[in-house]
Image 1 (cartoon, rainbow, N blue to C red):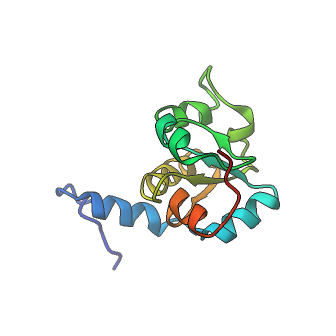
Image 2: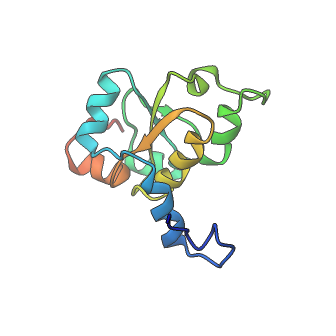
Image 3: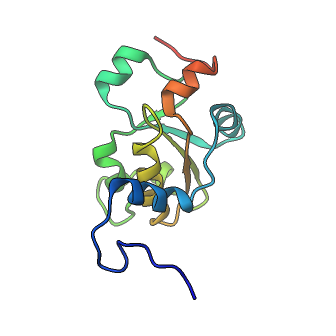
Length: 135
């Protein structure tokens, strides 16, 4: 008999459960793996806020898509659709500041039929690993 999460059973849930459910469907990448995936053609999409990016720097070659418009860029029926991001053959690796918001976003991106995952530890882990960052 299969398991049912609280949210699918109509019971109250928690952010911890929502995050666990989102991550259960992801093959999350460490910073070095994400960098290698990017070099192999994956699209690294930075969903951090403008203020975080201004404060901490940018990842060379990453695409910036604000988190609050990500779904509109992926929906082929939307006039604000971004063809490159919404390609079914695209591999998207999302990155936020610490790796929480990007997990939730990656689960949503996958619902559009796009291959997506996120970076464990987010930008902070990327920078701590000594990977490229521009000011």
